[in-house]
Length: 122
Image 1 (cartoon, rainbow, N blue to C red):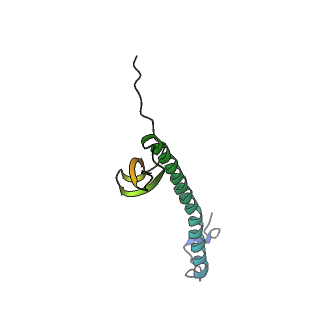
Image 2 (image 1 turned 30 degrees about the vertical axis):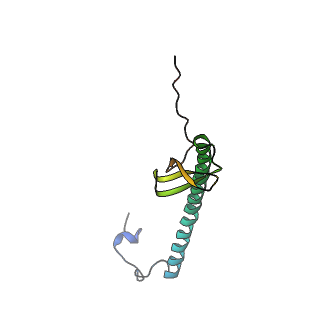
Image 3 (image 1 turned 90 degrees about the vertical axis):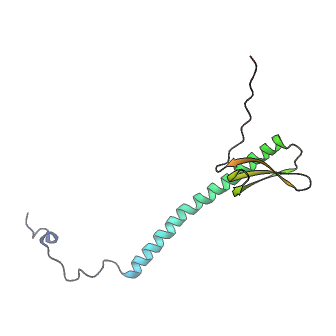
């Protein structure tokens, strides 16, 4: 095999080696398309995750409120950075006078509250 078969191996550089393969406009357009594609892939996943977490927190809060504050007329689940239960979803019971009472922390990823384990005498 000789360098005539593969001129790139001979160290020879063509005359227009300094000229890029694509223009600046094409490169800018490709970058914009890539960024928009990444945003189109990531944003729906984030929005879906937030919606599911919000719905789960609301359901878990209504169950916990019914258990711990049966006289409450409603419940409110919200994400607090510095709530009474720390960072994450917090559950509040709403009474007839629209006062809020803290119920339980639901955590960063809300889940249904667990019933306390009862010890059955043998």
